[in-house]
Image 1 (cartoon, one colour):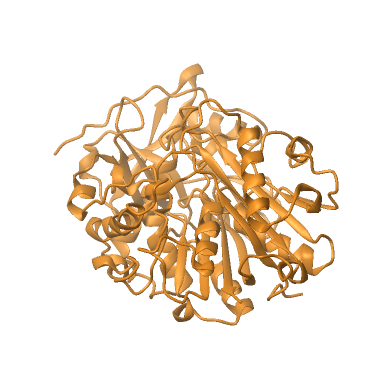
Image 2: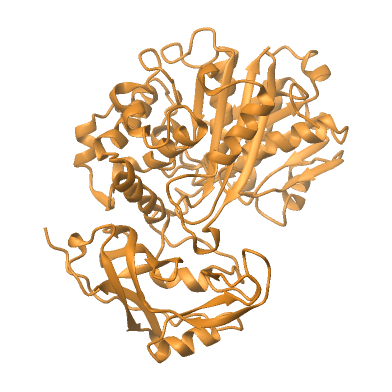
Length: 389
Length: 132
């Protein structure tokens, strides 16, 4: 069963906070849920499907569903593929709606890594019995170096340069200056990125995303319901998802899971990369963006460096406006999981509600791409294609 | 620029049914992995069932020789800079590891390396690699 035009994103809300020392994670989830339902023009009692991932405190969806007061649930899903999970939730919500399992699906994300002192250089949290842990933890993998390994290999194979990677941050910062809620609003230059401290070769500090508190929520509904609401209609056209790992030791760092999830989504959406007018691309690090752009087919494999250079991702001047909210690199990376903010900014673009300085004129087709986990070892990938009806 | 590698404290590795033989071998200076008795392929990291065909597997010694597939000197994740790397072993599998006993700034993708064993808490020896 295809989800093509079977469901609509009717509500989208990004929490304005970037530091919330006096709020609980559960409270942030609730504030995001309220924001997205108000945006859609729906209420708690309309919700019959709930989706959350590992940032939600408790056992799967159990504790947050109860905390939020979701008493009419008939569909739940706590799929967790790290930061990409929320794009998968939109896809799964559309599947559930198409199958008649729910009518109004709520997706929430929230976290306080900034207040809790988490960072990209701390060892990753792992659950007991994770089978890869004993083989890898002795070597001190942390978030940033598991992306740096992919960046180093990309440079080796394709001649990608640090300057080219820096252009991704420059574009994100150019957009963030217009976002009053963005954590980092100062424009930066390629030279400033290269002059920032080297964290793990070849990734500098400014190649890394922010650590922010906050959250977001989405409401996905049956098209018949979307037509009764007052918001512009955003259709889900297609979606893809996968997990890529170390391939039994046949490690290949030159491609990401987007090479699998992307073509699946494009086929279902019945569009091609050159049709996309705006793209939200997961930007945990600059290299994450570059590899996903290649894998989604916006340029050929190995040509990502040339594709992102010279402002080609900047709205108004470049060929592919990306992350016009400032992305994870400058705006927000709540719960260290940037997937939901990728969908939210794509919805803003499709509704014509992005900041006027970064709004893509007549934006009717947008893509959101998420990567969750570690690009250099194992990660989930999700691609979502949406249209303005 | 020169960044000499410095041995850092290593926690005692997790020993369980999946890892016990590996750490016992490492103590003897031997790097091992598991090979499928059905399809014959070696894999990394070692598993009880083959990740290519779910066949039964058995331990097999490795040469400990390979080349650097990718490397990153992690400079700001703690007090001591270290090189994390994927090493492609002669046997056709690639493992996450550290490169040690060298100037970290001199490391290059494609460089030949060989296994070396570094002591951890509790007497275990952790395989790492150094330039060959």
